[in-house]
Image 1: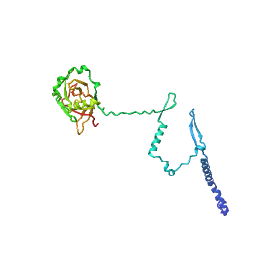
Image 2: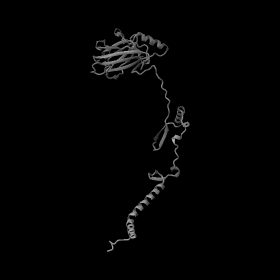
Image 3: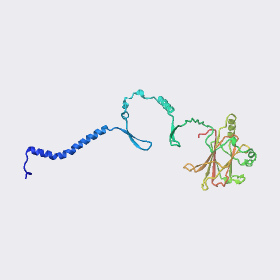
Image 4: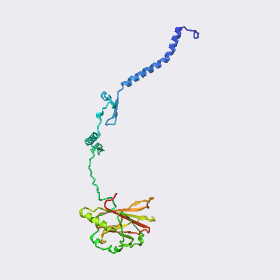
Length: 306
């Protein structure tokens, strides 16, 4: 009956404060909690985590001395005198390498971590100006036995050494089936015969009187124009002026080169001749030779541009 009666001004204010007090209390609590969290965060100390021998994890508070960071000097305040010259830097770098040599770490059988300095080896490589990369080298200590040299196996072919190979110019041999076969224990084999010019022998003999002879480089290019049977094995016999055998290579080492717009595919073998007595060669096929096979021969004296 008194619900709808009007109230005085003070009564309305009291009633409004009483109703709003229920909504003001939660905001007050929230403000108090925020302030408490702020103070707790500010008061929280730094700590580090570590594991003991039993595998348990521990959190240890860092001392105040470790948490404080030293002031950082701005880069702009550095003076120009603090920078090293190139020479000083290289000396400092060499000194650091000497004081702190490289090392490697390893674990021994007991599971302990070990460290060991890496030994520094000063390896000096001498450049061989005379010996160049080659598949074969003809040296006097590698000659065949004396009884083979005196056998006279190759003198009978002296009339078939018609082609002399000029220096820096290649000579092409083809139609091996029309050449005189070379007789071996396993039968007649297709072969080619050629000599080196006399001028190269004179120069080689002169150089051998005072110093070791400069190498003569013999380059052999073997091609099969049909390419149906693939590369065939090739043997080589090196002879002196009297056509006595000095060296025998039963199968030449060759490097394969694919065909390009300039040339067809071929097999190449490089031979260094370090024996002044080498004067002629016999190239033959221990197995059957392809009918379309050809041989390109080129030689140079002394140092090359390789």
